[in-house]
Length: 165
Image (cartoon, rainbow, N blue to C red; front, top):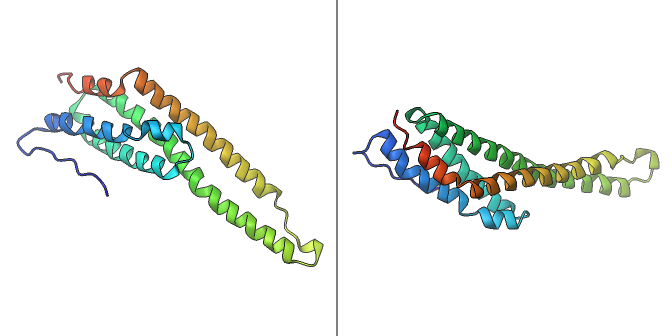
């Protein structure tokens, strides 16, 4: 179930952003250590990505209320989510490709005419490429999260929200 972020009707846009954005960052980063330490936890990564999308959309709404630095932070969130989205694409594609490969192999075993057999080399290569792409993207995502930790990304976002317009 998606979290609901309560805003205060008696507060303006900037004040409400300062209330909810830090909590949204915490929600995104709550899964960070587990996801980075266990690359195969696809569902956990997916939940983290969903939290990140909520943060991104909120930041897009709040962006006009803040300056360039806030916009730069939003771009960093987008960069992280882009990598996470591509990882998710691999996580969705590989099982389908593997199913197709199994079906091709079953067909090949069932056919009596060797000329009717279907080559599986291309799909095997594609599956390997998807795994390699996922590994590379996972390293990119982990690197971004490590940089955020090192540079105190949450503090950077909060600082960007304190700049007077």
